[in-house]
Length: 348
Length: 267
Image (cartoon, rainbow over all chains, first blue to last red; front, side, top):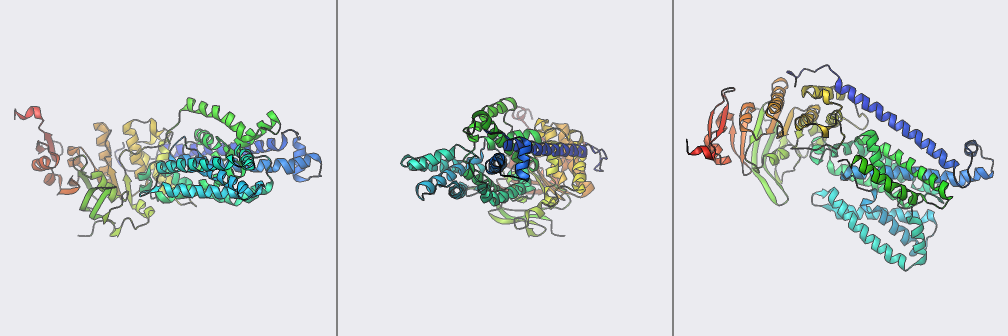
């Protein structure tokens, strides 16, 4: 150590901070570019390929031709929903892993997936709602109720800790799953809708679905970004976080609200799309390092790119029958195993 | 005499059913180094966590500038008091520069994440702990001594006038222990920082402390200069240690020489 406290002019620390910032900005810009390319691919490719100039034509000056109709009424809603769901699941997964400091935490940990599923099944069986645009509201409400229930059950004397929340989430999910099984076993139409929804798909939804959920998603994104400095301090432990002037309970609550809004909205519209929320934060962590102010936006963009690419790939392989949820499970599982074996799961 | 900035008044501290510290009073002398000593499990760390508002007292209160610390906005407290808990852990891949930068959080707002003042403070904190050269390295890949200095550096970047350090020299070899304590001493003499720390090494405690506080079973049993506190009687009563106390030939402070069982017969 130096002999006095007088500032040493050597700005090594300063340079290190600048270099990292440049690298992270580059990451963010590259991912934005990748998202643009994936969106273009999602608009152009499928059972009926549309050339890029015709896609552009359909977007800016549609003349009502076949290409225009396919792009505007099928592919635009699908692409927009894919971007929104991917962003939401990526951001939700990054927040969930950050709050639990558990690299295996999935955004469905709070029981949101099963809550949404029960909402959808209830809508179909009890209220005879069959239009997707209507039953997503039930799904969203189910997700919110499940998350609140998990939060209340997981809050013991000292407040909600990651461990009690995970336990409450597992218990509530199991209970809801039992209820869902009991309902769909006795109801044919409920079973069909549940199966269709549960696969995880961004196809066949109208643009209005994205519009319905947009306010909740935007609120979720804003809260998630506001949560990132708090997550950075929580990553050093609750004591250090408190010492740095953070209210740990408030930070946790903010994170849980953000996760619930994002994942609840995405899952109720698209079903529980597997692996995005689990896989994407790990890739983002490799790109940006463990700073959540960068990791969270990068995870969101990566999630959107991944969902779109998987959806396009499914369309190319099997026309329109291979849903994104199935493809992501098939590709995501080996990808995740590869990541774990190559890098190990880092302590977070 | 003016009221000290940091005081504990009749604090009762504990975890769940277990009360660790009961009815304790402590005035921390301003602009001086206070070292808390005591056997394992006597409540030293618990007291330090209570003083740093990491643990809320069951009853009684901790006062910062005469106001209850748990009622002050926690961010304002973080600008005045830095706390370094025992063995904190950093996420994998976090660089030293990023860790130290997080020490600036109390000074940041959502509308202003990073200022030149932050940058100045981080560069300075890295330089005084000799960690500038390690700024780009991952914290979890450093040696124990370097890691400890990185954490101290983070606490220094917080730029507080009070510092609470829980066993800051555990895991360090003797040379690095002296380095860290010299740094603490300089903070105190050159900047007037008030330091409270928990130490296990009684001889280093005696050398660096202006005030020694000896704890036993959750209570303060002795408080004063090292010469007043570190007596053979206290060592026997509080630590159950049979020892001889002589004058340290280097510093003139008390030096504790334990009388081990295999030597006892010969003395």
